Length: 126
Image 1 (cartoon, rainbow, N blue to C red):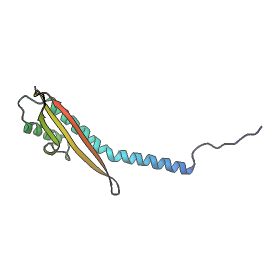
Image 2 (spheres, rainbow, N blue to C red; image 1 turned 180 degrees about the horizontal axis):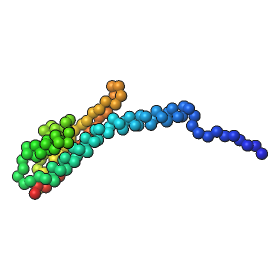
Image 3 (cartoon, rainbow, N blue to C red; image 1 turned 90 degrees about the vertical axis):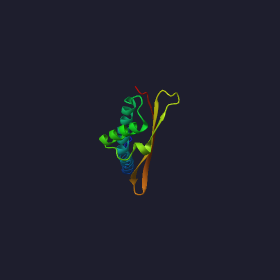
Image 4 (cartoon, helix red, strand yellow; image 1 turned 60 degrees about the horizontal axis):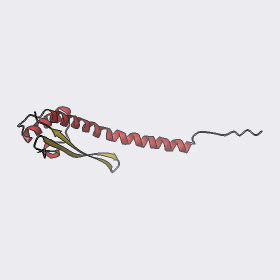
C-alpha cells in the first residue's frame, strides 16, 4: 500500500496575494469611513429637523436650523444653502427636503473616491 505525503496549504505567492488583497480592502474602507460617518451625522440632523418643523416656518428658518445642527455636529463640507432643497409637498400638507451632495477623498496617488448622496425627507409641520 502506497502512502502519499501530500502537502496542504497556501504557497508563499498565495499568501502575498491574499495579504495584498486584504490590505487593499482595509485601505478602501479606511478611506471611506470618514465620508460615511459624516453622512450619518448629516442624515441624523435632517431627520431631527424634519420631525421638529413648526407650521408657518419658512425655508430660511429651516435652513438656519439645519445649519446650526451642522455646526454643532462638525459638518463643514455640506451647507444647507447649496445642498438642501426645501419645497412644499405636492399634496400641500407638508414639506419635502432634498439632500444632494458629493464627497471626494484621495485614495492612492492621483486616484480619488467619489461618493454621491441623494436623499429626500418628508416633514409634516405640527
